[in-house]
Image (cartoon, helix red, strand yellow):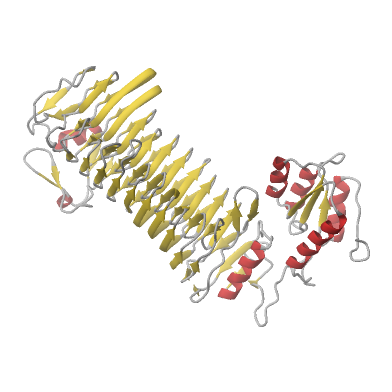
Length: 593
């Protein structure tokens, strides 16, 4: 290679770092197994050093294990070549990488500034991107397209600052997202800090992405996207789809807004972000009309969230429609090992042949939900026994506190379960929550939960109540005013304590539960069912039937530590204690003290 390139050779990792800082080469070829410092340590230093972070690195190593390759590419290498290798092929790979760079040196900078040449358009305005005050400035669709092109060719801009300083209309352009990922091995990430300045990027259309992640941004890692609005967009393809970001890993999305349409035949889809891994989304709103057929998850704000992601002060609006998906929710499709605080789902949910459906989330596993609300209606139909639907969550084994579900739940099909708050509850802890929408199902149904069970560990529902009417078909097997069925096996336990069921009950719906196999019902109050019989309660104490209106809603709110505030006309109560809502989506103005 020496006739074509000037070569600087280093015998150790530390020597390679010093040469890179001194000569700022166009490319670095790096082995992994070296004395003193291995290649992973070297690339980590290079990517965290201002002068060398933009220099592309190619690993050339005898480590042929796919785990080593994944680790190397994940740390920022642009290619990974295993030994023994053919010299001609290595030269071609280097040449291809050099052609993709398209860079020139700028004399005012102490490092090489990357520039895509455009006829009359500089790459970016502003400063050198090294600080917030000297951020790169994007003020045209051409510059936004340049950013996408550079990131998709391997420049992550990790740690660089960007600022949008005007509204940008992308009409007439088929958008290629900024960054992408295809499975765990092929990734091009945006890693910078972008401040949208409250401006809007509108009218972009994304198609033909195949198995890539899709959105305005396809893939971000260690990035910050804030104060950015995206409106009037259409996304019609992609394996992972988000209105703003397709796939977010270890990143922050703050004070953003997404309004548009998403339609896909196979995807994880969300209004703001398709998949959030170890990411933070705060003070953001989505207003999305979504249709997803086949795939895994769909949510009004996020499709799939896992690995420590946090959602704070966010809201989803619009409509989510899905067919043949695992989990569908008004806010999030499926969420695991995450925290959600003070968020609201207004999106309606309609799904056919889906596994889990909920007004807030389809399924929530090992999460914490606090001060959250779901007000959209949930309609689901399936003949699968595993299908479940809930006004707040389809399935949950999480900690849920001070949360509300006010939408109606309609579950079609003879199997499955539906509840005003949750369809299935297992190994969960639910405290101070309530539901007030109507619930109708041909399968298991409960005013608060369709089923509560636990094969090991414990399920606890305490200080909760339901005001929703419970409607069942004659063929129903298990229907209760509060819970359809409860049971525990082996080392599990189910406890329902200080809970109240005040909704109207149709024929065949028992006052509190239609089946209790073990477990405890303690200090609970419910209506008499049509038969006036409560022999289904097999292991409870301090239980009180309610056949008249002697305990008004003031008493119940007082007992639970809740108070009514705001407009008194929002809710009206009849002579008993069942509320009449002025309209389907009416929501009581009720807040814990």
